Length: 415
Image (cartoon, rainbow, N blue to C red; front, side):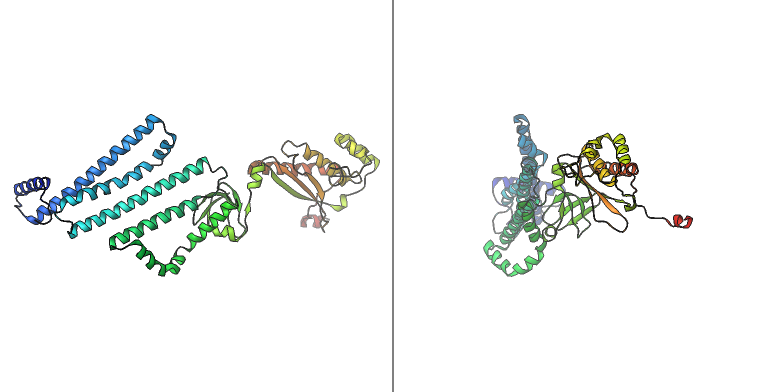
């Protein structure tokens, strides 16, 4: 029997196997003895490895609970110790499997060692990737105050680890130095560049996005060349995930954001104000100069305009000029709207407020309202600007102004 070694433990174990085979009626068959012996060694090594793994995990978790290590709790929560412990069974297997063979030249031993080596390499890769993921998550949740997109760096680091493990594993199986394999891979550099093109471009783009602070997780972006218009949820090596305002998901390659222009609404979010610009067309036929009767009526209806009407200064900064005059009903209406906006509880006075006239058109003169709402909530924003427009439409007739409205066909027929 060439496979089974002759040490005392092996002899005792083979005697037990012989007695068992004879009891079940298989006799002393050498091949069956060898097969059962190897199976027992494999099972024993795996069971011992599993027990050691469970024991070490239990001890580590108890120590963390007793010592109250915050980082340790994070390691347990992310199952880092569990993934690291996967390397124990292959190591135990490699330690015990030689006991099943009399010499180290056995082809079966080499095969089993090769399989165990591959399992150990995969386990090491899983352990290192788990550590890298923990380091990234810890930094991203505790130190990454600006939400820089660093997942691409994590993906690259994990990719490099797995490439190294694959190269070392293949070199070990082939019995050659890793440098020889790397030299051979140099001939396939062009093909590798094509295979990993998106990953390489994504990595470079991720560095540019992070270095220039162009994009962060949580930013609201609009990419005109695509349908992306929403919140950035994740930035990885190969994709930027955007959740649109209608809850649809859009996936973009990172280099798309670098090679083309996109709009980032982060500045609006940081200042907590949202620009309102609305044009309301005033019918030119309703614009007229102000006589004494009209001015007296306006002062009675809108006492806040008394100072502007009585003032001879036409370009006092902020109150008249760009935001109103007392020469026409339209100028007084602009002055009223400015006063209304500057006293509106949801309009910011720290930012520019303008009520100005735009270039005349064939349908009338656009009256532009330019101000900032004190919110970045979409529903509140729409409610504020709708309220302003409704107020303009309601108050304009009190200044003898008409809002342009296209003549309907029924009106023409009646006339």
